[in-house]
Image (tube, rainbow, N blue to C red; front, side, top):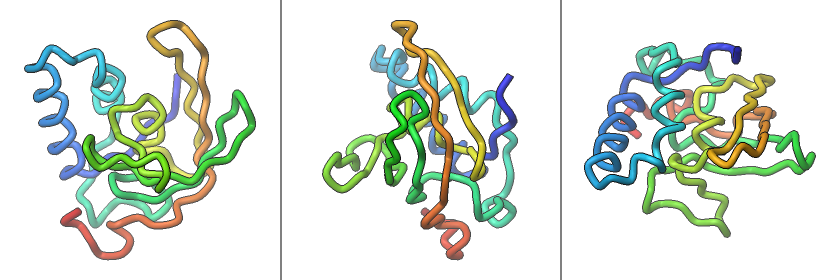
Length: 136
């Protein structure tokens, strides 16, 4: 079983609203993985999250353990994603897997099609909470 992940109260609240919105549109297949991640998370106030944890709006560096490629992305809400700027929507499996990880943690999972995937969080470049931005 994967190690516990950490999610802020505000991120959890906003992400649960997102899950509800997608479910109401019968697009729950897009947020099923995210919903399971939130279920296993330890929830903390924004000012208690360690600075090495990937939160919403964090800019992080991770390794795709299947390909060995290293990527830098920012975790964003749907509508704010931009492949060229490295802005990854939280409804993607990779962003959902990164959310709540601490530096050095690895998350392994299988896609809906059964393909094995794995990421390791290498570095948190920017985290809003560490910068005093509990409102993002």
